[in-house]
Amino acid sequence: MKIKFRKDFQPDYNNVLKVLYNERPDYLPLYEHNIDEPFISKMVGQKLVADGLTPDELVDYYRIVTGFWKEMTYDAMSFEAKICDIIPGHGAILGGMAGPIQTREDYEKYPWAEIPEIFKRTYKPHLDALVKTMPPGMKAYGGCGYGIFESSEDLVGYEQLCMMQFLDPDLFRDLFVRIGDLYMILWSWVLDNYGDLFVFCRMGDDLGYRTSTMLEPDTIRQHILPQHKRVIDLVHGYGKKFLLHSCGNIFSVMDDILANGIDAKHSNEDQIAPFTEWIERYNDRIGLFGGFDMNEIILNPYEVVYDKVLSEGTQFRAMARGYGLGTGNSVPDYMEIDGYMGMIDAANEIRRRETEGK
Image 1 (tube, rainbow, N blue to C red):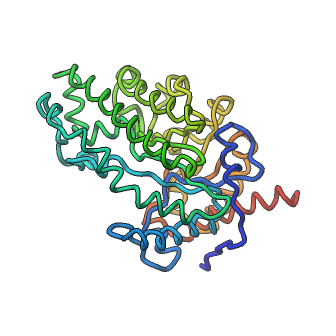
Image 2: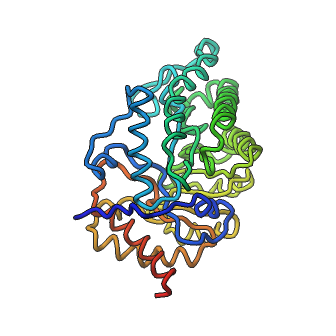
Image 3: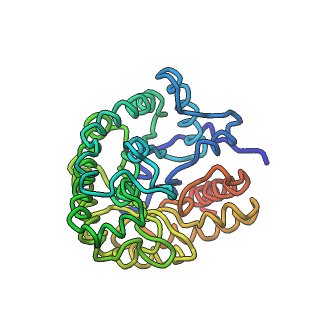
C-alpha cells in the first residue's frame, strides 16, 4: 500500500498532555510505548541503526526518527534512556541466565557507583541530538527506561529472585531499596538536564502476566511500589506528569498503584480484559492509553484494522475523559505496514469526523 505521510501535520504536545490531566484532548491523540527501529526503517525506506553513531550522525538519525513520528501525526514521541541495557552484567531479564547478584557478597561488590557515569556517557549524545531535532510543537515522553522490578530481574534473574525472597529476605529487601536509590540518581540527572525535552515522564515496569502478578501482590506492595512512589514523587516535584506502563493482569494491585499518584496507565491485552473494562474501572481517576491488542493490528489486513479502530476508537474516545489511541503495547519490527497504517488512518478519520461534524 502507499504510505500516507502527513507532512502538513502540526503537532501540539499540550494535546496529548491533557490525557495525563484526565481531560478530553482537543483531538484524539496517538500514543505508542515504543516503535521499533527496524519498523521505522521499513516505513521510511532507509535502514536506521543508532548504535555506534557519532554525535553529528545521531543528529541526522534523530531528524529522520522525529520526522517519522510527526508525519504519522503523533504530538509527542517515545524516548527512553534504557537503564538495564547499560548496567554491568545485563542480560538476565532476557531469560536463560542468572544475573550478577546472587549473594550478599555479590551485592556488596557490584559496581553501583559506576552506573551513573556509564548512563550519562551512553545517553547524553542521544538526548542532545533529540533536543536539536525535535520538530516545533513536539516533545518526547519517557525518560529512564525499565522499571524497579525489571531491574531486579536483570540483576538477579526472575527464578533466582523468587528464591532469594525466601532464602535471603534481607538481601531481597535491600536490593529493591538500592535499585530505588539508583533510579533517583538517574532520573534526577535526566530531569535536571533534559526536563524540558519531555512533555511527561513514564516508567515501564511489567508487573504481571496473563492471569496474575509476577510476584505476590503483598510483595509488590511492600518492596516495589514504595520505590515507584519515590520516582513518581520526584517527577511530580519537577512539575511533570507520570505514566505507568505495566503489562499483565495487575488488577490486584491497581488500587495501590493509583494511591501512589500515577496520572495515566498504558498496556492492555484482550486476553486479560477488554479495554472498556479499564475505562469503566479507572476512567474517573487517571488517563488511559492504548486500546488495541497488538495481535489485532499484526494479524489483520488494513481494512479489518481500519474498521475496528474506527469503530472502537470512537467508542473509547466517547467513554474516557482522558484517552490516547494506540496499540496495547508497542509496534514491533515484525508488524505489517498495512495493519499499522490501518490504525493511523482510522485515528485520523476519527479526528476528521469530529472536526467536520460528520
